[in-house]
Length: 305
Image 1 (tube, rainbow, N blue to C red):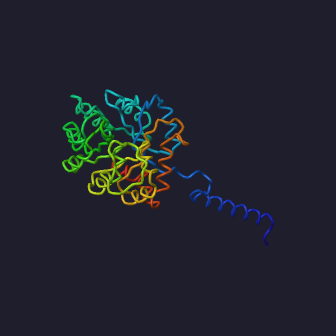
Image 2: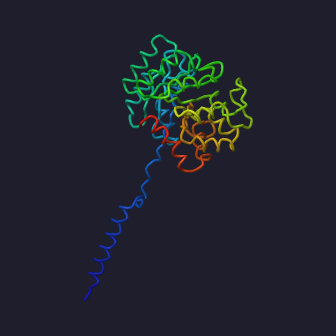
Image 3: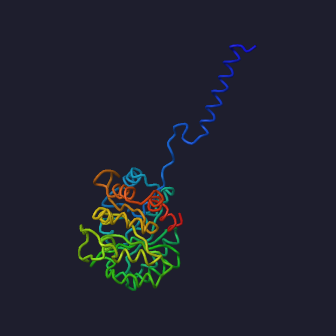
């Protein structure tokens, strides 16, 4: 005969077994899901006076899981007071799970190759942000490209008409001369030239885009060319013609990398370019697979993270 005591004991055992089974199921214990992996290809230390602690909080608010720190050379601070090689290496040393860093030096400085080589040997994952007053097919950049080839690392370039890495129309020559070096394009002239009819002095065009500009062709024709979506220039590319941006994301989804490059402290809202760039990728990417490549996979592959 089954007693009330036996039923209570069986009910207890059954309830306990169900509870144990539930904890074995993902999310069944209401614990938060692991964060979605996001790589930010473009950030700086001391950006317009922002502290390391503010940078860390900014990236956390954005949901970025790995940040690439781009140092300045010995002069100019990338026009924003950004920190140099030692600052990015030190922050990475303190937070190795959250940061990696590139090496950099003024392109036409006599010690440029010596300095960059030193930090590459110390663990830098690439070279840049190259933002200096040389032509993009100059002997100085070619020498740096030779170093990148030797270390098998990419170069991130700020391309701005009449100021930094000029003569963009000739950049294809460098891509052809260094087919094993991956180049990452960034900034005003890079993004303005998605348009076939771009007027080069205009840095932030607002008109509708006719596909087939220099940037479109370089991404299409050269396996070693990639694009950094960061900064106001990348955000302007998204906004000026969303129909074009959707098509651009679709055809270049294996070549585009999310970056923020904003000196915001909050990591949210209308003043944070980074937050809006990430939202734009999620809105404009053709599907979930393309979104994941742009937010994570392409950078992970390029940097071998």
